[in-house]
Length: 395
Image 1 (cartoon, rainbow, N blue to C red):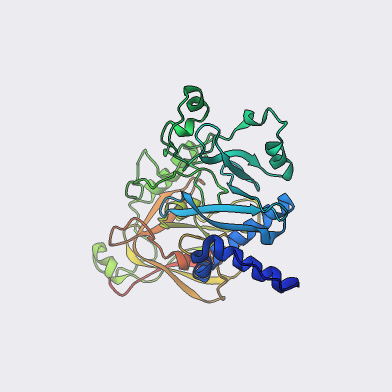
Image 2 (cartoon, rainbow, N blue to C red; image 1 turned 60 degrees about the vertical axis):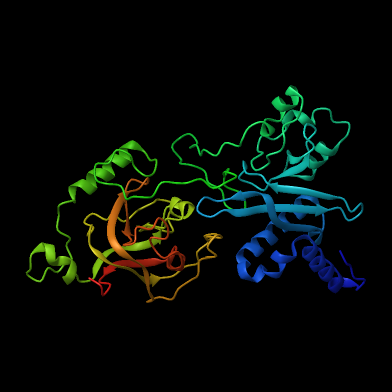
């Protein structure tokens, strides 16, 4: 790595640029193509620099060559390199997948195989010092079990194979739900929301839940789920209120549809829609600024009607959603009166884990992802909208 003797801020910035070009020149050159991911890594660098008491320009965050995260898209994880300015020794970390705070896992040499694996959890500078202390005989008592993405040749001794079980079997790629019915935990590239498999696995195609189905798409409270199914069944055979049949047979109503107001409230969607990349349904909340969740109930939805789902912006507010890093989408604030098309397809509803119903559009091409337009959804996130179903000009 080349350095410069230019004094002051200019010299530090030039040296930092040289350091990043040396560590990951291609990613540094193309950082403007995925600026949200670059800013996220900058935040990670500042956080760990503050925790360990090192200058932030001595921290680099690059793509992890061994670990990839995500389900719909496999994204490289963060490999954090901290260089000691006095000894020039480099320490490498990865985000701790099992904590909701700021924590990392130190990559160090495995005594059994000689490979570089996560061996210590670090949240403060004292945690790192406890691991590096040569007089600490108990540092191996809490060796981390989070070793996804580190396949190495098995060590020769059976005792070492028993201690380092990540060397003797393939990582478990099955996702299990935590207790209390909170649903599966999926990870994002920042490594803050649970564990992800080291490789992509096939997932079955999505289908909207049918009335009376006993296997709902999401885990939820049985009583609330039963109530939602009952409400859907009660309105299943009703004629939608705002459909103009023009005096024709009800079967002709798809070609004579007027604008249907589905509801008014703050638009949002379940996190599973982003995690699975389906982006298929949305829901409305009447009380966005209150701690009490007051969802809009779609009591008489035009199920089976084809059209265009439009969100008319009534009031705006800033959205603090982190966005979808894999697609490069972040929330933006629209203007009042703006009409945003969320998608085109056939209307369906399905029960929500919140005890109500969510509404969406099933596309005509039977694709598994992006049933609604993700960019349009993030444009409307946390905005007060009037949700309408309009003719799309093709029906």
